[in-house]
Length: 370
Figure 1 (cartoon, rainbow, N blue to C red):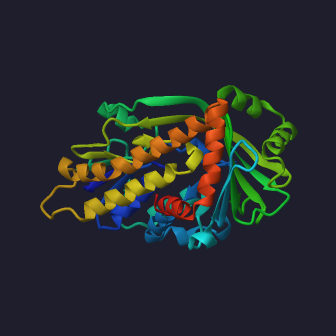
Figure 2 (cartoon, rainbow, N blue to C red):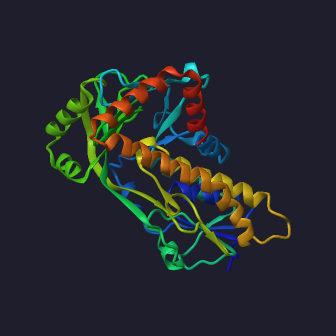
Figure 3 (cartoon, rainbow, N blue to C red):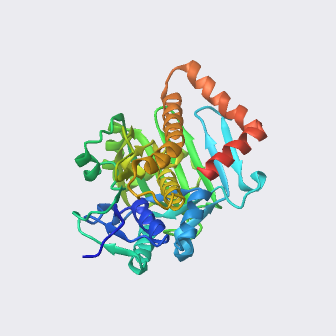
């Protein structure tokens, strides 16, 4: 039997990127894909918002340029609105001195390109679930079976909210503009996409209390579209559904340990954050980039599964992942409050930040780098 140095568990983008990244170092990688992902079926409405650091990683893996042109859409401008007139925060790639603020990527297409890259990777082999190696990387998502077998706990803060996603077609061009509305108690985002219609496609991510999400999912198409028009006040033009709707529960969680002798957690298996900042996959791909660098820079005599080596990865990722969790949670709590004084404070805060150029540049730089 072929001896593997690393076994990667996970059929998502993080697991596949990890397998590719380590195989490019010449390591023999076994990939446990597991059962097919339900979201990969026809009608997949997932979309990823990727920052510059994530794009750079995918480019280094020879994956980014393999994406079809209409499967990735540049975000040139962003407009964030509060729940009071005039409370707006605007970002522009041109004023920030960057080519784009982010990219919106068709999730199913990215998964397909990663799968194709793995099929042709010379050091990657598909293996069974019981495969063993000195280093096991667990990227199986929030309900990781391997993490559970290790006995690693992942306490969860349940928000009582669902994320509702769909693909839309707008009557007016998106022009590379991402829109977001922060209101009590929901957060709505329209992400520019060139699918299903070039220049007019949008990805919807709408975070709502459970009961409201259930009600929206049960609405006939025409009524759901009217609810969207009411929520956006026609800012993006007339909106039409271009397929099915999907929903999932929203959580904040962090594994009590992200590494141990011979194993490490990556992506959603290690941490979950609210999607309001669009940073979930960016955190996971940053995990991959950090772990790959730590492995590449290890001492020649140190084993891949050495816990002291893996703790270097854990220490480097602790602050960014914890900070993003606290940021998204804090923003959610701030904008979920119905108190008039809090409402006034948050809307004034948006307006103030919008007037402070240096602070906006700092926020943009942090977002681009993850």
